[in-house]
Image (cartoon, rainbow, N blue to C red; front, side):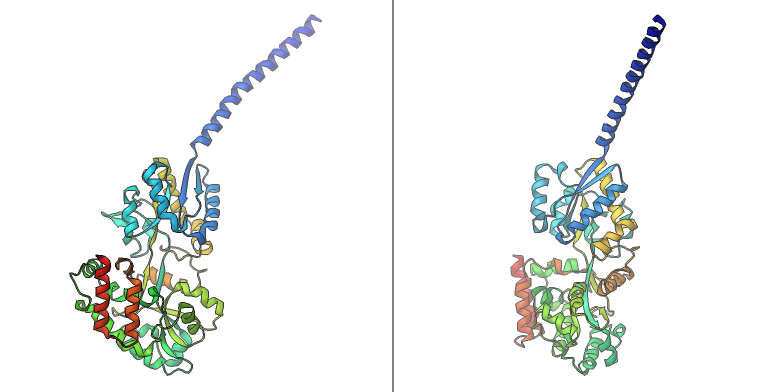
Length: 425
């Protein structure tokens, strides 16, 4: 009996010892697991494109699933309130502001510059298409990764061009454009070779981008006009462009229609060309057009480069921790340099990449054209962002008078000049 009790005691002690050892072993493991969770770097992202918010949230889930040490949280899209939201957050506790945020070039760039981390070390930065990083560079460093690009120019009907015997690639001067218009005007069903829209940006801002975009020093010229130091009519490129617009007037619809009517007229064959951007594709798809489209630029500089630009950039908060900054760079490289992330840009967000090395086979026709121009470097910049703020309405009114024959090219430039100077005061 004593032997039995002795054995039972030994077994009990052994079990207790095992349990005790297990408890001691389990506690450190649980603690290690907690430490692992604490070490996961949490980063946040805020942006203003409401139309991609849902897809961006899904991208974050995919990214998180393959990066166990990072948790990306996509904050609610701020839409038009983004800048006010960022101002409030950076003014109070900048280290707690979003790790990744978007803002535009120009004034917004300058407003938040002190909170931006240089992004030259990213893989994505090495693949940015020609000219698309310019507005994010300061003091020789890159402070933003472009979200996407858009492009505008003369969208043309390839069938009408073929019937008229016009080769779009040969239109490399304004005189060549005039000759092409004379031929296109003879095609049955064509009411006007070129259609413009009357909305302020489509009537003035985009069309008047061309003469400045052809200058290498437009960033110096535009402010001089606004300050009154230089007159538009004294700038050879601008003067020549306005004179050619006067010659083109008989071949245009004089910008009397809305954007919807302009695109509809093009879909119906009333216009052989429309001055528009790749965003018109959505509406063209609704009309189920049965012809192929192409795009060339307004040929002000001896070629037919289109105008390509971007205004929205991803920025990284330099007030965040070093771990958060590194995690943010990892995500941005995944989005723009990893095929898994790139697929979201083109297939889910439906954006035109501002980078080389993307698979663009799923882009729509006009988006694909813009992407090809961008990758080839045959592009002109967007300059209208430097026009004095708020001039689009009054300058569009000046264009209406010009199209109505109430003013000539010189008078048009004088009126626009005055609007700019007044707006800059």
